[in-house]
Image 1 (tube, one colour):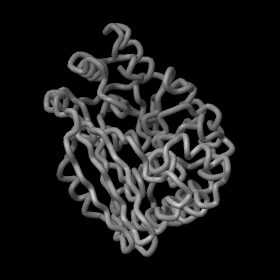
Image 2 (tube, one colour):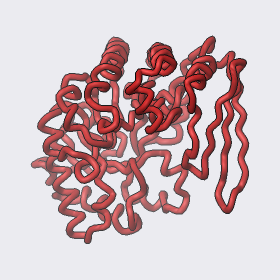
Image 3 (cartoon, rainbow, N blue to C red):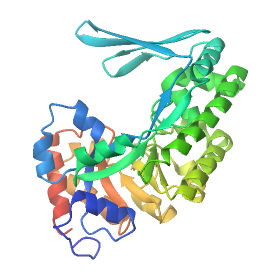
Length: 357
């Protein structure tokens, strides 16, 4: 028995997740992995894990941009056993450059005040177009093994503009200085991008997807609650207004420390917190999160350190997460990296969730 309710082993992962999202008491929690890991971690035996009951969270990109002032050139070459990828964005005002080693960015696009202006030029005069076909592809690929979430990976990686600047285009160090100085070029680009983000959402709500995710990767230690309230909350409210009018719901990828903005989160009509992580990575326990946000869907990410514990300890930690998150609106997920010793630990978690806790 789980949270005092009987398990139903006849339901699919899709039906379980959809029931959880609708607020039906969770009788057998879903444990699901991001589709990105399935596509990019070929050494993991995904067919075996799916056969054991692992679900998948599929992200469908809901929009595309048609650019009139931008040309993108990418080159790839091998460098000391690694893959180097260079990306150039070329406009009539100049060009921007970033590069990667394997998956990891080594240099950001924006390095000077003038680069902010070039970045704005890259997006000016373009058009945002709804991409409902992505949902159809997701339906076909995923089937009944999980849930489809919409994402808006137009600017950067689908975050709100201030987070795009921090994570994708500027980098933490320069971003922190420019934000503290309220660099005019940065503020002008931010204002422009905020309007563009709203247009992305206006197009996204034309697609069939009901749950739409923002990949915020919020770091409140660097942003601070003052900037959160000043820059993010007003934009969230505009986005939520658009979504609520269309019958859509917003999920935010908040995987870090949240205690200092817990009240703001409570007041915002987020449907769920994706990749919510308790200590030591986060600073709120699952029990605290459930008490503070009783109606929000908790997409719970067990800390990766848990998977290094002995089997009995891992079982107790997972059991505690399930009991604290329930009885309604939660699941477990693999969303930050593949768990250590996945051949042993992932099947153990799946077996535990099938049993009566």
